[in-house]
Length: 79
Image 1 (tube, rainbow, N blue to C red):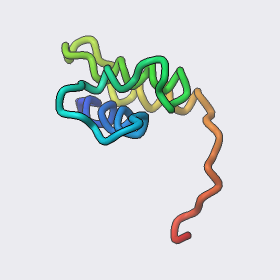
Image 2: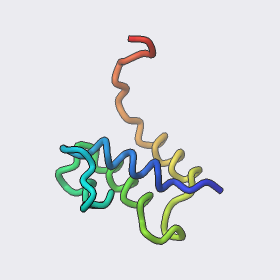
Image 3: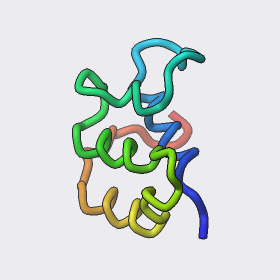
Image 4: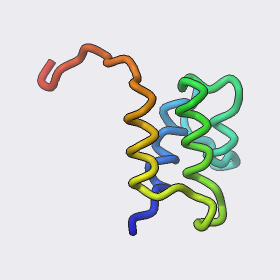
């Protein structure tokens, strides 16, 4: 099984308004003023739970992300 913590932290960094401050944890960056859609922020919060047993599996994360049907940015590789 693969842990999803690092992916959750990556999502938290994408949501941050400033560079990831050392004093803040990923969960602090995924609050109500997050730049991420609420469902993605909630998923990322679950992925960064301190207790690994409380985190979703990689399979669950993939399933949840797929079900969100997020809008595509329109960017293609190489642009």
